[in-house]
Structures are given as structure tokens and as C-alpha cells.
Amino acid sequence: MTSTAPLAPAAPDSKPGRGRRLSVGPSWGLLPFLVFIGIFLLIPTVTVVVGAFQNEAGGFSLEKVQALGGDTPLRALRQSIVLSFTSALVGAVLGALLAYLVVTAPPSSILRRAVTSICGVLAQFGGVTLAFAWIATLGFSGLLTDLMANAFGTDPNGSSWLYELPGLILVYSYFQIPLMVIVFLPALEGLRPQWREAAVNLGATTSQYWLQVAFPLLRPAFLGSALLLFANAFAAYATAAALVSQGAPITPLLIRSALTSEVVLGQANFGFALALEMIVVVAIVMGLYAWLLRRTSRWLG
Amino acid sequence: MSGAWVWRVSRWLLLLAFAAFFLLPLVALLDFSTAVPRTGGRTGAAWQSLLEDPQMTAAIKTSLLLALFTVIGMVVLLVPTMIWVKLRVPRATRLVEFLCLLPLTIPALVIVVGIKNVYAWVTYLVGDSAMTLTFIYVVLVLPYAYRSIDAALSSIDARTLSEAARSLGAGWFTVITRVITPNIWPGVLGGAFISVALVLGEYTVSSLLNYETLPVVIVLLSKSDAPQSMAASLASILFAAALLVVLSFLDRRRRTPGGK
Image (cartoon, rainbow over all chains, first blue to last red; front, top):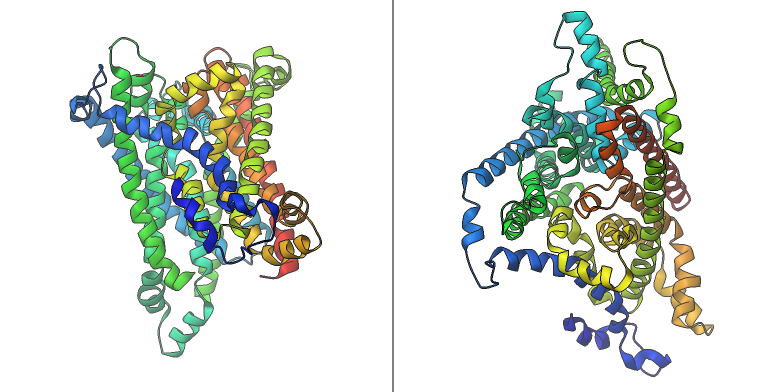
């Protein structure tokens, strides 16, 4: 990070002759931070990117990246995208609805405080505990399993679909909806009542206001939040790992098998290629998100 | 006025539906962790074993210690850097922000895949223990801590404060630790709370590096003693919830006096 060094003299408040340590250059103060980030974030990332283009001997090779086109990785990627897309769609629509139900309550109300707190926990804490919550609900001798078995005579051994793609979509929605509430609430709060009054004064009906004023204003924020949800689901690992203990239906779990299996030699480098695939997908989605966010802030900042 | 009435009823029905969806799995956890198989009776054995099972208590201790070290590491690394950038190197603001938010784009899973070489050195230098996870956790909590501290730092006039302190003869160390930091304390505390919640729930890194933190042990135990791992799951969700509720009250206290 040598680029920061020449910045020092330009700092507006640097007064020459004051302070004994000024001669060292204030940019040096950033060194510990930059070194730490370099070691524990940038080096691993570079290792992944470089490793994806290396063969076992360490030379350049496209072998691993080409292997991404194989049957298993492609199926995992497709399932991952289906899972991320579906859970993002469900999360975005239902989350936006819940956010609207909450935003119509006054900011200090218990309802709003409770919903935002619960959403904060479920969206950020997540991980394995949520997987177990659903196993306790729909798995073997789960709460809902027993209730349904008694009432409708369904399979008392639990729902096997819970451990497959449909189950993952359900459990992912359980943290996607709360995340949507958290990221979409500020946009809804930015919707000024004056705009509605202006529309009504000009003779707009409620549906006209929603279709022609509110929805177009909220669309970038909605799409941006949905993209964030997509990236969140695509990068998620813990919930799926706890739910699916064998097999690798989605890309993150395929990375797990590449890391932990010692059967096939060179799997570690294939893990690099899979991780690179993950970086690329998430980076594209987050790039779109940042672009949409800039458009949103023009109106609903 | 029937339209308003319909809206009010459907609003509460929808809220009830959401509440049922979100609370049902938590109730199921409670039910599963206290049920006696086949008899319909209740038992607190699973909850009691959280405090008695040596593997579980060791895991809880590990996770709590990790949370503590991560918070210390985050505060020591991030707070002085952010204050320094604000006061002395404002042109590095974008760079530091970019680096702090980068872990949102680079999933933890990717960091684990690439960390092997770095980790060989870490374990060589400081020994092989679960506490080495602290380094990665500090990176993982950066985006959340950064936002929290940044909000606090932009709400005070750091430059005036530091100039006042400097003109009274304070050195930079005093300015950072005794003048600016106390003023952004709520933001630092907020970042610390979120960090604790994130570390206590972290599974990706610890499981793939084979360290027995609380979530890892919850998964391990689920095969042999399901009720106990359900109890531990619910307990950790409730603990994180309590942390974030306290945080939301801190947040309110910070907002009210300023009236932003």
C-alpha cells in the first residue's frame, strides 16, 4: 500500500513544524491496519485466485478452471443459483411486505422494535442454529411432524425434502426475509408523506399513487436489496452444512467436500477453482448492488 | 370507511402469519429440547447438560473467549485507524472503507480455502489453538464494526476536539484514547455487540479448520444427543437476541439527545 504515502502532505490540517512525529508522515499510522488486512484478507484471496490457475506442480494451468465445466460442479452451481434466486425472490417479496406492515407503525412502537430486533438476530446470527430450529419443526419427531401425523396421518418420520433443495429454500427464506426487512426498511422510511399528498392533490387514486409514484421510486432499492439477498444466499455455508451432512447439492458444500476429502488427489486446488467461481458470482452481484444503491440514494437518501 | 377496516384486519392477519412463521421453529426447539420421547412428559435434562457436559462447557468457554478476543482485536485495530484517518489522512477514507467492507464481497468460505499458507505461519508463531481464529474473526466482523463506528465518528466534530486537546498539550495517543474514543463509545460498543453475536454463531471457519467452537459442537452432538444440541441452539439464539435488544436500546439513547 505504498500509494498512501504521498497523500500525507495534502492533508488539509497538517501544519508543518507542529508535532514531533510529523516528519514520519501520518500515513504510517495506517500501516498496522493495512498489514493485518493484507495478511488475513488479501493474501487468502490472492492464494485462491492464483491457486485456481495452477496445476499440482505449481505451473500455470487452466485445468482446474476447465474442470468447473464438469457435470458435478455445473449441477452444484445450477442448484446454488436456483436456491439463491428462489430464496432471494421469496425473501424480497415477503420481506418487503413485512417491512411495509412495520413501517406503518410509529417508529417507537413495540411492534416495530420487536420486529427489527428479531430480524436482526435471524438475519445476522443465523447459521447452524436455524437449521436445527427447522429440524426440530419438520424433522424426525419434530413439532409440526407430530402434529401433522396425528391430524392428517402424514409420515411420522419427518419430511425428507427438508434435507434437499426445497428444504434449503425454506430454511434460507427464514433468514432472507429478516435480512430484507433490515435492508429495505430505510428505503420505505425515505418515502415521504409529502409525495403522497402531492399525488393526491393532483387527483391520484391510491392505486395510481402506488403504481406510478411509490413503486418506481422503490424499484431500485427493491432490486438492490434482492441482489444483496442473492449474494447472501449464494455465499451462505453454515445452514446448508448443518442440514445436509452428506453429498454436495450446492457449490459451498462442494467446496467442503473438496477441502475435506482426501480420496482424490488435487482436490485442494479444485477447491481454489470453486472458490474463485464463488468470488466471481458474488462480485458480479455485489457490483450490480452498488450500482443500484447509487441510483437509489438520489431519491431516497 | 370499510376500506380502512379491511386494511386494519388484513394487516393484523398478515402480521400474525409472519409471527407464526418466525416463532414456530423456535417453539419447536423448546419443545424438542424438553420432550421425553414417547411419554409426552417434560424434562430439563438437556438444558442442565449444557452446563455439565464437559464438551459443551469447553465449547461455550472457547466461543466466549473468542468473542472477547475478537472484540479486543477489532477495537485495537479499527478504532485508532479510523480516528487517524479522520484526523490526519482523510484522503485514505475511501481506501479504508473499501477494505473494511470487502469481507461482504469475499465470503468467509473463500477466506478459509485460501488461508492455509497464512495459517501455517500463525500456528507456527503463536501455537495451535482455537484462539487463532481471532485473526480471521476480526476480518469477518470488520464491515459491521466499521459501519457502527463510522456512524458515531461522523456525528461528532472530531477535528475541533482534537485541535482543542492538541493546543492544550495532548499527544496523539492521548487524543485518540482519552478524547475521541470516549466520544464515539456508543458506536464502538454497538460494533462490539454485533461482533460478539457474529462470533458466537460462526460455523464456517471454525468447522473447516477443525476447532470446537459452540456451533461446531452443536452439530457434532446432534448425532448423539439431539435434545442437547437443540437446547444449545435455542440458548444461543436467545443470547444473541438479548445482546441485540440491548444494542437497540443503546442505539435509541444515542439518537435521542442529538435529534438527527
